[in-house]
Image 1 (tube, rainbow, N blue to C red):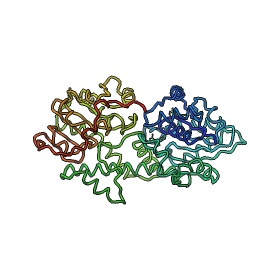
Image 2: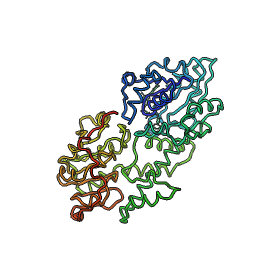
Image 3: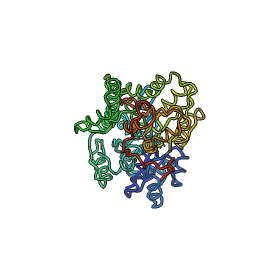
Image 4: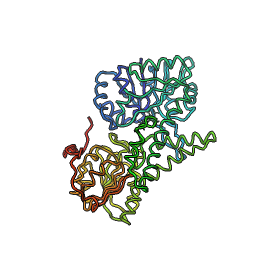
Length: 462
Ligand code: NAD
């Protein structure tokens, strides 16, 4: 079985490397020659825990090839996965240019019957269009089947998710193609959901929309907690114990970001709109998230009046821990707002600085050393719950900041722990703490103690 993958981004690279790890012969293609060269040399262009060792092992074993020449990738492939990007258009719809280009190229290059599986997140009906495009250019004697196989991996644990996913969706009208795709993934023993292509495409959008809804829901509850004096952590714990609800995605914070939820929620609103259905619930989810992302800056303005000239440390650039992906990260919105307010920003992140530099250039300072970030800062904003941040002892803020004020957008610290330090501490959906109130007798118990390694200030690829 020869497999090709179109696109070597977060999804395509993980798919290609993991399929090779399963023992398949895999050729990954990308239109970006720089990425291909890097991958050929055994280096991953993205940060993803575990990727380097898998990449090198499979390159060395000769099961994995990277090429910028689509003919080499597609001509002998039995199965071709499309994993190219589907970014957001200005009107919120999914931009399918890369998907259709890939389909066109595949049609031109194939020299045998093949099955085309789409992993990219695409609106309902796209797989049909992909088939039409390939049919229009492929050699007449070849048979092509299309299968919608949407991807659910989480950046930061993408390799684990490939091998231990909750389900694999196989959406096709071809029984034969479904059986072949099923065979590929059978060794993983992951439950398969076989369905029609349109339902498969909708499953992906509905899954992301539901998870985003949970996040905005808990953020709404957090906003009410703030006003009525309840504690969102207690509330979320109590809600999450209900097995019908579950504890996941109930962490209040400064909103969801990343390359999927923001664009996929907007795309689903558009998909609904095109069939004259106003998806009011999802519109509200997006609105709440936009509000949540800017909350930290609003609260800082309320507290300080003006942020002009204030030194602010933004702790975390990646949209979540264990990735270098900053697409639609809440940190970006926050930094833009801080700069607009005239603040002087220094941003810390262990791996995402190169990506953030591409966005902000010299408009702010960057550091991969957390102590440098907070040194002399008047305000520290926690935007990503990296372990380096979660386990930074609170004494460090006291030691290195002028009058430590922390806005914790990810509720990384327990209130009990903070209350033992002379720190002004604002978090999400939990009562604020101020130094005067906070001078309580020390409590034994910090389970964070000893978990921060002074030398562990940046992460190198595995
Ligand atoms: P990405 O932007 O990281 O990577 C896309 C890659 O495709 C790029 O390297 C680009 O150069 C390449 N490409 C573009 N056109 C091409 C073509 N014609 N032929 C070959 N390569 C081409 O995107 P991603 O984050 O990997 O996402 C890919 C798709 O998977 C999107 O639809 C996304 O919504 C979906 N998805 C992403 C995630 C995630 O966590 N990133 C999770 C699930 C689903």
